Length: 444
Image (tube, rainbow, N blue to C red; front, side, top):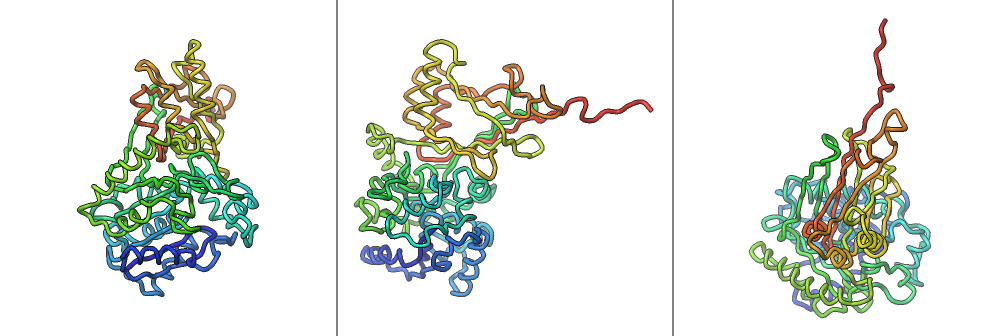
């Protein structure tokens, strides 16, 4: 059985063309169109919790199968977050009903449109035909914002969790996303590295993680690295597709390889999944090699790099600045590299509105790897946080060079840490200290 789940500001009817195209391709599974009510995601009172519980109720009311691995699903855009929230909340990796999960342009780690004004969102996504323009779904858009605590928390539940949700023997998840922006009036939404709505890097579910702990020895932090296994999620960049065309809207798909990839994602088995991941990866490499040679920065390879800063008590640190500099910023070449890093490598910085401890840095990996081209080069990443202990009774020692160390990366480590078309989560833990006046004993 095939279940289809739409995204934000959409409805189930828009997927009927895709269903017809799939049947033309010989896909014969019965299709159940699961939807949560037309435009329900645009209600400012509706939250992801409401969508997930409504989906579970709808699933039960329609008496859809609940046996492990008995259902395949296609989700688009925000639907990717909804279905991940749903199955991690109501099932375990052993009991989840999904077998094949195809995500089309999912917003797994957010969208650069989510935090923009309501009029901007309406014009970008609906062009001239929008309705209910100023009802955008406040709570849903908060979860869709770049570097949101919701998307990071969801990744903690399924991708970074100790139990395995994806891969052979589990959910066979394929993510397909476009890399071209919109045309016409909707082109106002186009941002570097996006399909018009979602970043290529934030669509990819296969994230990596680096934990940097400054608690015990601030000058020599401890590191813990979590890489992404190559065969747990299949990821494909469908060249020339935008956020709508990839799911057969607007006379799409545009790429002749897209529809066959959709069909294969819905028919691949456990034995062939590792090979499927490798073939998509090879296709991605060919697309990026060609696109990275182009002048237009829109198509360059970017990484969505999310920083989260906490102290040893688990409290979020919301007032901080991250500094990136080359070779200790000493000498003319080093200062030029540092300037170029700020101007050409860091393409965008977004601070999550609800919690400034979460910040997304869009890193142009093509420009970064070109910049650090000598074996002796080093990239430094340092942090300064407020309150500063030297001027407060409580705070952090981060202001002086002798107070806290930096993350220092050689060119090989730069290439490992910063890779195109994915999200990297960097968690920094600082040591919060207290001055002598905070608590003291006196003689009786």
